[in-house]
Structures are given as structure tokens and as C-alpha cells.
Length: 112
Image (cartoon, rainbow, N blue to C red; front, side):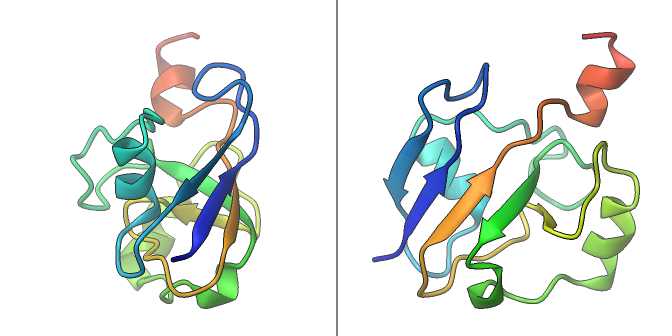
């Protein structure tokens, strides 16, 4: 079973976390099942960017991003080449290293 290593995030997992994830599940679902409260304002249908993450290692084992996901990512805060929507990134067979951005577009628009 692949592992997802979450790098420390000031609010969501200050110590970081290493969780088991079943192949075929999304990064978002795996995080939520392990009590890492990734935002998912659109209920995981790729209609927002609140679940945006950076996949720092292992991205080649994920499913390919859809055109819709790529279009949504263009609106994400802090977009970089490792960006994925965690609700759309499906875990393969390899371990992943994931970083949750400091902010989401919701936090920026709400003045956090």
C-alpha cells in the first residue's frame, strides 16, 4: 500500500504526517480519512481550487490531469509545476510527498 507523506503545514498538520493510501483513491480522500482537513469547497468535483496541493515526489505514478483540472489550476493561489487538485489526483502504486499550500483561494478572498 503506498504511503503519502504530508510535509508540515502550520494549521492542517503542524508535525507533518505519513499515511497509508489505497491505490485508486484521491489524495484528498486519503487525507480526509486520516483527519487531515484539506479544504474541498466544491465537494471534490474539480469546480474550485481549495484542495490544491503540490506533489513534490511521486507525481509520475498519479493519473494524468484532465483538461478541466488544468483549467481550474490556472486559478489556484501559488500555482507551480508540481500543482494538482487533490480531489482529482488518484494515487497509484508509488509513495508520494505532498505539500499543502499555505493559503487557498478561499483564504485569500476572505482575508486570512
